[in-house]
Image (cartoon, rainbow over all chains, first blue to last red; front, side, top):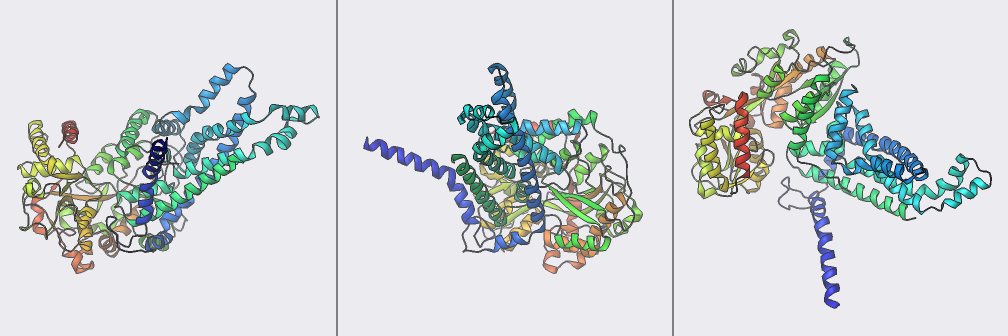
Length: 256
Length: 363
């Protein structure tokens, strides 16, 4: 028994280290005074200062935020509507088929998704731009929102809504006054998750980006190709902290 | 919350595959309304370039001069550039492919002929860049930055300065050698050391070159085209096949680093400015090319990136240590020993296979 807990604890710690050690190293080296990421030569804020002055980085950040916010709003709206519709669909077979179809983007390799989107945009002659990136992100974020919102929906007592109808509420009133307040934490959590995934996405963005639509992950990637500098560590550290914060917020909201 | 990212070359390969599929339904550049912006029009110029290839001060200067706005997007390899353009990305005006990619893009009809009248600075090109094998009359491309591929080495760790590619097979430096992660360059080095052209298409010769590379593999620490400047500067490798610019950067960190183009000869390369056929601002694009080729502007770029400027006048304008650094400005007596990488046609399959076999061999 005793040795069992020790074993459990040590594997737990090892797993956490395995997951977080690379990130910790990255963050530590973003404060390294040496241009060479290999040796520690003292503490500095220089790389963060350099980041603050880099205009092309500001443009990439603006693009990332525009894409993340708009695609999150779109995906959350669509995902919420789809989840509610699915929940009410009579006949479990149709529901299973639709559910599978809607969640497919979550399962197929992301590169397929990227190639498919690119092919689609080219075929219907939509020039690649920030718009196509937003559409792409919306496409992969809808199922993410659905998974989270449906988990919440399933926990709701359908009788609450029925009671509202019995008391004379219109469907819209029932949704606004009863369902929405109960669903809100889940929807907000889903939205934050979608925002995080959109901010982090590389592959779909890579395929769908056109002129003037370089996002932060694309920028980081191209910076690495011109030499790993501590500036990238600093930028990545900011992204990691930001993403972790958003995920934590999302989880906190879902728990409510 | 990280999403899995796939190896880059896979992404490129797929983009290229898509490009083949969709090329049938691709809009031709003539499609759609075209607007020619007049002077003074607040036009936007889209410059598609290598990451970190253009200083923000230089862009600001062009914006001030013309009133146009410049938007920069970046790519990380010639293949990525081609895949992006083939897969239907339109809207870029000016881009910077390397020499061999210029000929591929020319063949695919992606480039707009240059209007020489708008690019007077072309008259100041270095003599040896005036007549390039892939675009002899500069109808489509203007060389911008150029340099060589050679060996960066740490003179503190290597007693006799190497003068031959053979040093990369020296057992004394086992595990302290890095090679480029570029099949044509790696094979090019061996082919040169065997007395052949780096553009050899003879399968037997390529096979023999592969055997030499397999023999070398246990000595090689890594095949990388990005990190060798760091590896050299941190002392993790003492010999690195590489472009001169990054080696010159490593010299700043570790003064004992030197650069040599071996006596058997090496690659000469040039990244060239081109205007895309799908550009909607062709006149502005040519003005931009002319601006980048200006002696003062290109000298500043040369100084910052540590690659040689194509403009003859620029050489006098860069600081002496840069001008006299053979990693940045190849000595002119070296020119006869340098060779341009050329499209090898169908033989590329032989290279592909040999390269894959080399990569899969256990050292």
